[in-house]
Image (cartoon, rainbow, N blue to C red; front, side, top):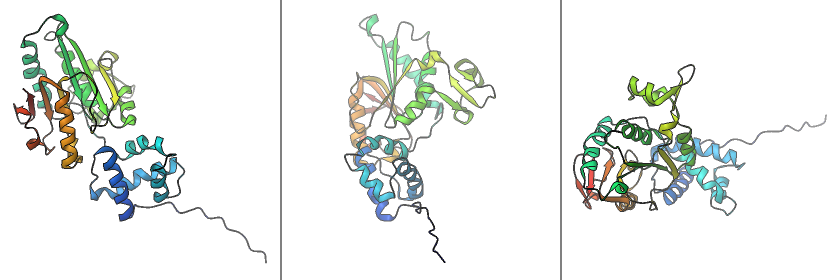
Length: 285
């Protein structure tokens, strides 16, 4: 009786081994400054598995070798997109935006100005993810149009992930991202889909924000900013990387500019170049 050949599909890799996880963990740290928590091995495994399939690599080891090869140079950005955590929503920590719209803008417009051309407000949303923070800032600016009459405003949102920046530019969000947005703001600033499942930021607001890719471990080569938001991001960095990022942020601040930080960043003893004005706002003297 003739033998029948049975074709079997190669087994799909399940989860990173301890050795493999450490290799990828160090690779992520080396290229982004982010130290992945040891408890996230399953999450990281799932995200890397999608990338090795896309690159037609047989297993985790083959994909790691590919990442480190000349042939895989173009994969680095896609890899970092896949493994970085990006989750946020509009007006996260509302009192930060109340301060920005109130005390900060009041102080800014009262500073002595050299002339009409010097009336410029520059704001940076660092590690902006899919853009909710940057658009929240834009809403505050738009709602302060009388206060800022004659001012030119620039809002820049940056992130290491080009994938989330594409979503930020499209600016379409599900309702769960808008829980902190009042009904009046929702009607004024967003267009709802036919089934009310998604909401898109209106064009006038989208035009206020420029999005660009940037690694926080590197200086941002742009004119200085009057206010920089860096929140719920540095918790993923170790101490050495945090210090590099803080130095870059302080250098990006204009004299008198403010750094707005999240409550759990673990950086308060690194902010000595700045003057503490509140629990979250630090000013460059």
